[in-house]
Image 1 (tube, rainbow, N blue to C red):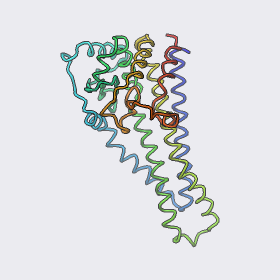
Image 2: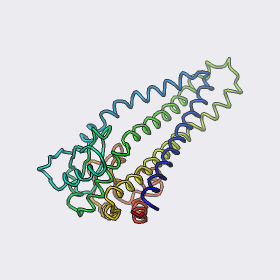
Image 3: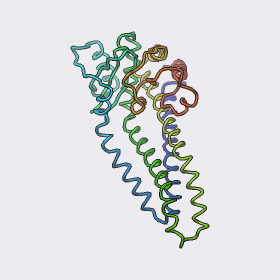
Image 4: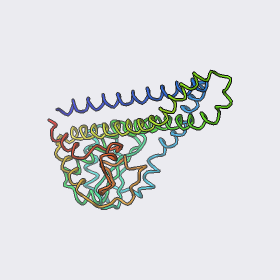
Length: 298
């Protein structure tokens, strides 16, 4: 598989998963609206979820940098890192992002920011100390690809969609029991059918939403790998870096469930990661990513 066909495949699959998201939301909204006899509930949940995500979209980079305790650096602090980022930005046609460092032994990195003009790349001290130049270039190219591919915007959209689904199912759970006595004048048979469908969706929808969220995130990681390899024209650099990252067992003390999806590799380490957790993980197994990179033809 070439770099271009790999990228096209991942883009198609991302849009397919997003389509599933919208279909699921419409299905939940249709059931709830029919059960309660009003579409205003659905529109309220939609508007509220979008509004509540507005703040996180505009200020997510500041929140993430605060909780990860990342520190900004200037060119004089690490000229080699700056040169790598500058050269890759020129190749990618991107403005130079702000560069931050996390004082952590685990090799890892992430990108954040609402768009390419307000982007941030953060790398750990362990990444700088343990990577060869070609490996560091591969990691930086991967993070720049997230910026160029507008993955931060897509992630915000996905979070909004998951929020809508959770809100709708939670609302149905609460109101279906609280308001049943007030709807006795309506046809109980029709209500019963929508009630059963609603309970089924209430249980299944949040699980499906998180599975789709994980699937989209995994596709974007594969896409960033392929796009990053296109920038450096050397897929082995990133493949080798991922091998080193996977073998490193140092913990990342600032890692949390809220920010883990941002990193180039899952920051959590240990035997607790099993097949079930991998299913809901926002990162594909590193072995699959390495294999895909080494199967690419430049």
